[in-house]
Picture (cartoon, helix red, strand yellow):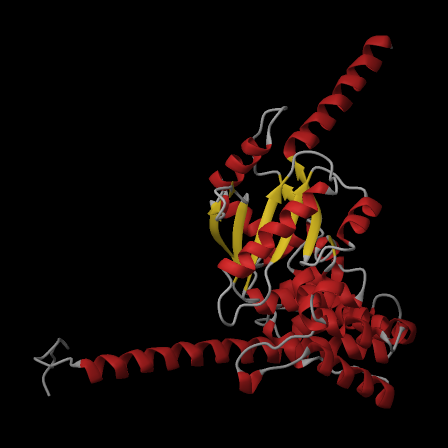
Length: 388
């Protein structure tokens, strides 16, 4: 053969070839993902084993406080081209294993408490796992041998994500909440940091609702998880005195950020959708969304004042309309959410007690509140300096 350039050579790319090529491309991408997960899992299992050794062997009691530093130095000397053996990283390995070891041994009932909250399937069907099931096996392993095996699902989470999660989580439930979110949503580390700093775990599902009474148990738990309290609207620029219309205008103008704040899975349907009744009356719900994973409409009413019971009656009417006019075959019951300036928990709970539709009530925060607080503090500081 003589040297030659490889070029297209009169090949007829028919429909079958195009379909086969697309299939091969898909399989190749899947193989790349599987390979990267396998590499990540192998590395994490190795890190987990080092952390476990340092804990089980009681290394610092046996060899002194400097054992972790000495171990890091010895490994770097033996494997100069390898990464991951810095003193800091080896400390993280020990802390990682210690965190889950302590949390699980502290209460064998921890698995039962977190199971409904963070259980869920991940990946393809043949690779699906439930965190609850895996942790039950982890606890049994601990009970039998005094050691913990790394849950398989941890292999789907990058190492630096793990460090961020275990170093900032206060409980097993919180850590697994973020593990779940990273695997489900493919979160980047910067986005994970933002959500942890915004205390998403504490806010998620904290809105006051009547879901327990108005929805079947499994649906009630899931529906509550898509609401939170408070909602952070710091991305809005509003004047000091603003109306509900101003707030609504600003949210729609910044609908991308609003969708991010609502959470994963929300799709914007419309604003002030005209609801016309046979008698000639018309009504206009503020905002309508559809939550894709849960297959349900979410009707949102915005209020720039403190919550009053009358708000629930109007939203109950809008949710009824959504169920009758928008809800399709296969959709779950619609839910309503009132986002207001402030609430009184007793007033909210009493007002929702006899409401038949699933409603929730939450609050919002604006940057202007923060700015005003900072300005007041600066003014007080200046006054003290002047007085001094």
